[in-house]
Length: 422
Image (spheres, rainbow, N blue to C red):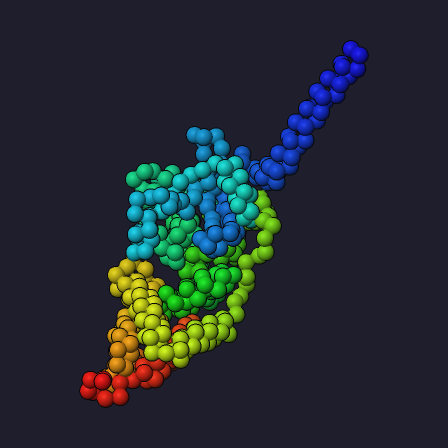
């Protein structure tokens, strides 16, 4: 019996050992891609790397991310300089975001932390080596270290003009003596800020249509390669095409050389293009119009309630658009054609609703609502003629049927005479 007990104890011990081995192997398997990738980089040469991260799940991760990696002698390891740091718990974060005064900062983190984070987020991480001269590399290291100081690290984030990608672009351009800027400004970009926003938010119809609603006409301007570098993937593609002149014993060479992928995400690649959502907008508009029309035909009071709801909704959205245009630092929300379709003047529909509830809409209010509908149509036509056809038609298709239903309600329950009703 004692022998059997010893055998059982030994078997249990081996089971525990085997379990630990399995856990260890699983852990090694999880980090193996990152470890292997780091071993392929010869850090003894003190390379300067551009990391490019692919899409994630969150809306603010759909545009990608990037950072610059340099060897830090003080820490004895590579540091990833990342300009994309922000905190939802910052004081007044929502207020700053709404007014276009969002505060981001730059912070160095270790290569190991970075790879662990993006692997956990299932975001592809690719790497390119910048073929800078020794003096350029040293200058970039000093520039990054100075930028990371408490007095220098914070900046006002702008999603198109000043973000993690444009900051990396500007740092590289500065140490190359403007070579990057000259070449990228001469390159045509693909599409516009609006086009890229539509493309990268096409996975969500509400986000897609919402972005089209708030963007102004300046977002439709065609981009240069320099401007398109607000997207990390575009910057990564550009630096591969640009050549550096011979200097410090180095020949003419590409600015960047591909060093492979540190982690490949198990998600679909980002879309290369985008189809207009006019059909979906028409369906939304027809459904909204049908609901309002149904309420109108139920009777005077239901018509009045429908008019009030629509008036509050349209005027509230229009007020937000006007505030974004005139009272915030969101540059690309100014000169917005959507204001012709949705604006505070639609509160007149609520005034007309009160009249409909009591005695019927008077002629003056009915004419005013017709003019609002006409101005929405004219504004849409003007935007189309100015070259903003897709977004203008999408917004109009989703909203104009509702406007038409409200005008119909006022005409259906109009005041027949100026005198008091018996």
